[in-house]
Length: 354
Ligand SMILES: [Zn+2]
Image (cartoon, rainbow, N blue to C red; front, side, top):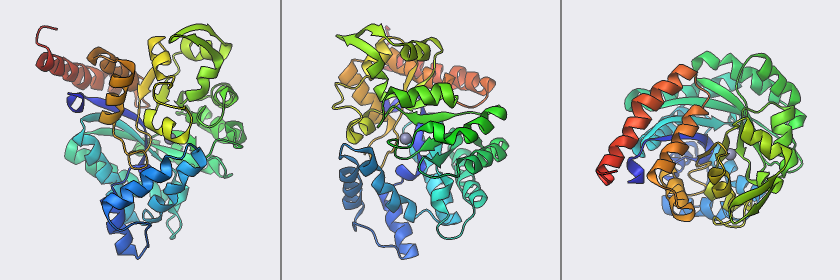
């Protein structure tokens, strides 16, 4: 049933979501050696590497996936295949992100990197009808975030919908990239920031109040600003209140958060608290390959661990679409033409009397 429902994906790393088969084929073409030979072994290598309860270790696998994404052809192929993967599980709209600077090792410039990915996304969209936008990430440990922000704005009419900073959070606070965020805000563009994953509420506060984030990636540790008893919030700090009051969307990645150690277990993940207390949350995959997941799997986990109903899944999906970075009219069109009729159809099939 979950596979059939229409979905919206807002936190989805291109370089964390390749197919293992594709990595093997691209590596063979380029003469790159890999840590495993078969797709099964390679998938397992990525999953084991990711599941070490540390964000820095989780990110190590990206050096392998990015090593095969250094040509126009490879980038276009990976982006195209990604849309087909999304289509297979009925994703209606997706925002896919990646860091262009990680794909310049063999001489491509940043513009060529972005063009190649957009080309692949367009081809996938033309074939499947999946709508999508691209988010460009700057790396937290580097100092070229302003250049990446300018790149994002330069491509805004061609498929780029926003700007993010990614990479290890610890020791790299978002406020270090203030000039980049200021530039994006001055151009009336969109910001999402990874925050509250490996670092606490200070990082979320900076992302929202100093950098002007319109959405937060993860926000797992916003829980530290709440006193919770039996899933009920008894007390909230001013930041948690602000995020709830202003309806700031939180991109929740259940599997990834357990693997990086941002939360000790799924049952202790704050998603249930956020959702039941009316924060604007949505489910996302983060990295399909590293985390061995899909949106279908993440929804399944949420149903099992947090007792979600079909109505709840619909609410999360509509939350996601409302929070997307495409223009308002496009959001409404997807909500009313695809998401609501799609859920109504599944409801009719699963329970005709509901
Ligand atoms: Zn992420």
